[in-house]
Every structure is written in C-alpha cells, then in structure tokens.
Amino acid sequence: MSRLIKKGVILFLILIWAWESSAIASSLPDVISKVKPSIVGVGTYLKTRGPPAKLMGTGFVILDGMHIITNAHVVQNEIKRKRGESLTIFTNVKERVVMQAATILEIDEDHDLALLKISGSSLPALTLGNSDNAREGQQVAFTGFPIGAVLGLHPVTHRGIISAITPVVVPVYASFKLNPQLIKRMQSPYNVFQLDATAYPGNSGSPVYDTSNGKVLAVINKVFIKETKESVLDKPSGITYAIPAIHIRKLLEKRNQEK
Image (tube, rainbow, N blue to C red; front, side, top):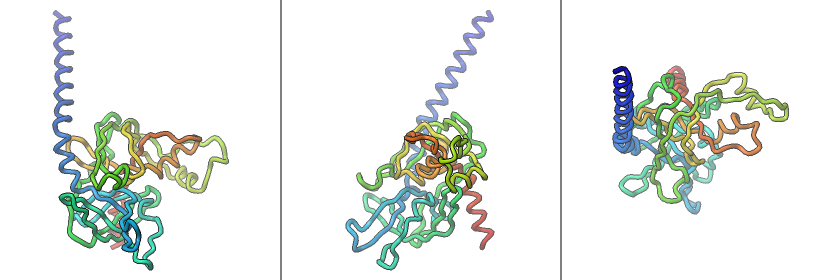
C-alpha cells in the first residue's frame, strides 16, 4: 500500500510540474505581446549622415510612458550636437519607424544605467518587479534588438532562467589585471543575474522580465559586467549578465530627491 501511495504522490507531482510548465508556455506569448510595445531602440539621428539613423542599443518605457531605461554606456558616446546629431528613440508602429528626441535625466555609472525622457507622445510602460525576490532557476525572458536594426526594427525575445545570482566581481589573483574601474567595483560590490539565454551587443538595455506577468526584474548588460566579471579570462565567454531592477528603483528615488 505504501508503494502505491508513493507512486501516487510522484505521479501527482509530475502532473503539477507539467501543468505549471504548460501554464508558463501558454502565458508567455501573451506576455510578449504586452511587453513589445514598450521596447524602443536607442540611438542617434543626423540628417546629413548616411544612413541618418544609428541604433546603439535597446531601452524600455517606464513610469508615465515618457521615461526610458537603458544602459549608460549606450548613451554616453559623444553626440555631435553642433553638427545636428541628436539622441533619439526609435519605435516600430505598424511597420513604420517613429522617432522621438530624448534627453538624459540621470546616469548611474556604478550600475551602468541611464534614465531618459522623450519629448513626443507617451508610450506603453512596463512595471518594475521586485528583483530582491528573484531566485535561481526562475523563468525569465528579455526582449530587444540583438543585431540592431539590420533586419528592421523588430524586437526579438529570448527565454531562459536565472542561472546564478553572483557578485559583479570575482577575485583577481594578478595585479596587472587590476584597473581603476575594477578596483572601484570591488570596493562596492553588488549582485548581478547570470542567465542561460544568449544576448548580443544590441541587447544592451533590454528588460529581463518574469515570463508569467511581464514585470521587469533586471536590465541586460553585455559590456559593463563582462569587463568586470570576466577580467581574469583571456577570451571572455558568451554568458549573459543583467543588472537587478532594484538599482533602477534607486535611480528613480535619487531623481525624485534631487527635484
């Protein structure tokens, strides 16, 4: 009898697991449909340049639909304003690229985050989740522009799990591997998410969100973290890292305090 009970319990657990997996799979298409209108390309526009539009990374809309989060390294390239170049947000509306001018409101260099504001019409906004509750093994997805706008301004989604929650830096056993930026981050370490889904340079600034509800848990960072975390490697890996959304909240709190 005990064996039958054990088999029944095992079968019940298997059915629960299958049901949960099916629920995640069935809800993800709906979540992606909700997320995509909030994904924007971040770049510059210069009328006399060919092509005039240059995409540098991905961003996503928050708050009132007029604010954008992206990576700081995406927008910190020198913008030749005297020549007419401007920071620009690109969106795809019914197969037509719509451009809106943007300004930088806040930069958080320690976590490579930037808060922008657009000057045109508001866009659908995403909701920030609680990244402190994120767990290793949790299903997540991220949406952005992995290869820029080469194939058109069409957001691409990748799905995976949070493989590890680890410090942004690892011990360095040779002094020649150290640099001022690395030393600074070692003095103020924080955790980042390591994902098992592959991101590409254009994904910088993409939101990492819960596959069940679309709430943002982190921001993809393909450059900043890798330079820090994999500085001991001669050939950095293709591992994807993301900055937890708690640092977005802190950036917004700083902005409110400065007003």
